[in-house]
Image 1 (cartoon, one colour):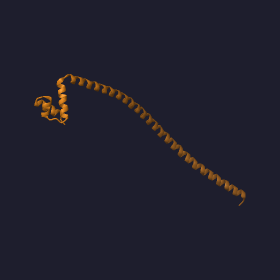
Image 2: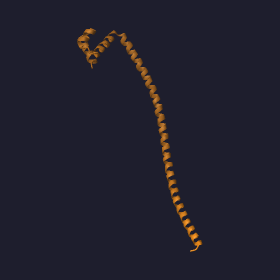
Image 3: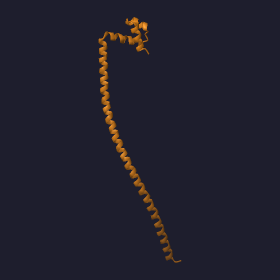
Image 4: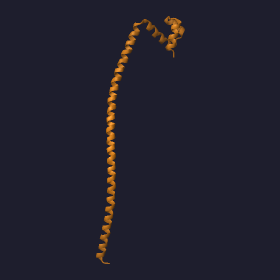
Length: 134
């Protein structure tokens, strides 16, 4: 065999190998392109979800601020009501007697001890005792 035929054979083999490598690379590029498109679609979906979550979070924040304001107003109203109740209780001597009796029951006093300490009839002492025991 001549050298020119050998060179020709080497060139043909090199061309065939080059075509094979190009074919493999083209398939790989095609796969990578398809994967890239799929990831871009997933990215789009995730971006939409993120936007929806951000909007929902903003709505929750606004609602929380509104609820906080309402809770503050309610706390203020409860404090005012408690103050008014205390003022009313202090104005009514009978009410103070019942408050004292309730404290005594909470402290473990019996019906007889209530009658003696608060100077009240047995039925009234029993009623207060039953209302405030336990």
